[in-house]
Amino acid sequence: MKRLGRAEFDRLLNALTEVGYELIGPVMRDGAILYDSIAGVRDLPVGWTDAQEAGQYRIQRRDDQALFGYVVGPHSWKRFLFPPNQTVFSARRTDDGFVLETPPVDGVRRALIGVRACELEAIRIQDRVFLEGPYLDTAYQQRRAMLFVVAVNCGQAGGTCFCASMKTGPKAHGGYDLALTEVLDADEHYFTVDAGSPAGKEVLDRLDLPEASGAECDAAAAAVARAESQMGRSLDTDGLKPLLDRVLDGRHWEAVGQRCLSCANCTLVCPTCFCSTVEDITELDGGARRERRWDSCFDGEFSYVAGGSIRQSTASRYRQWLTHKLSSWHDQFGSSGCVGCGRCITWCPVGIDITQEAAALRVADAAEHDG
Ligand code: SF4
Ligand code: SF4
Image 1 (cartoon, helix red, strand yellow):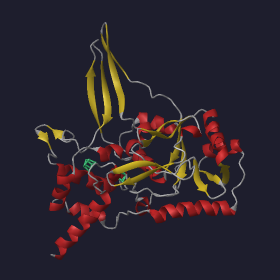
Image 2: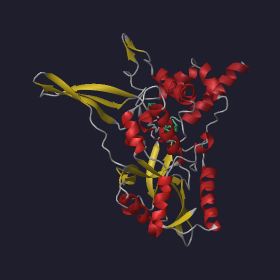
Image 3: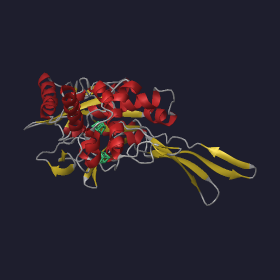
Image 4: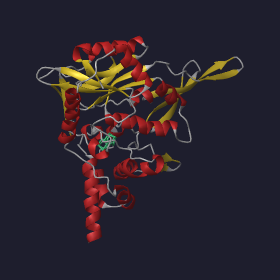
């Protein structure tokens, strides 16, 4: 384990730039912490944090100068691997017909700075969806192959996080090139740094950092343990899959359906949701293109087949979303579709909380069996 002083953080970012990566990291914009291009530490939300609760998000000043003193915002890293809009192909008229062209992937090597443990797990889940299923998404594959991941272990829990109960955080276990833990105490501000890949080791070697002391490693471990102990929510997954498989009907879905606005926020902020639709667009010059864009199972048109939409009620759409996340995702991909990041709770305008809904289903099911 190496030690990187706060004052040297730009050296790490510069080293990544020198080896050819575009840096993407947290930035403060539009009243939230989002992910976008950064040039150095000055672009990070230094000294800011986020206060989150169901249906609430606020950025606030911290009383220190932490670089990563917040958790996750409305963006997730999926927008860089699976962009919200992408052109699948375009068609152009020629004298003897038309030609189809597939746009190349941009070829940008990106270093993601500040990826949390839950987000690493979300990337692993999307890897299974896009790379390990029967159909390979070659654009995702190319973007993924060019990625360098700098993980940051969480030193504080957000108001809606529940990664500990999903066993996805707050400490990163693999899947990164470098993993940092930020330590701030009265006198010192530094990071412990661990390489998780040959590419990460190469960057660490360029920096020629000193070893972290035993006390510094202990302080980093204590910061992560503090985040875990702060976590106010949990999702009890024990026996949840069979429970969801048998409560396909029931008053509970109607009750949540009356609160849910079918706005799709939860699916758009979720780092694992992967549904998309395609749209054909014709141009005035006779050209055309097919666009692929994020879609949501909360959209009334999403389940449209000849004759109409299968899931016409909001209750049926919420049931589809929750049962897919926590039950049928296991059948499809061998894991839960939820990593416990809490985004869907924070960004739901009416504060619907997946942990509470799962708990309520458990109570309703127990009552039915007792009765
Ligand atoms: S379902 Fe909610 S808590 Fe789970 S990964 Fe998606 S946004 Fe995060
Ligand atoms: S659960 Fe909340 S965020 Fe999701 S569609 Fe319903 S109202 Fe929107």
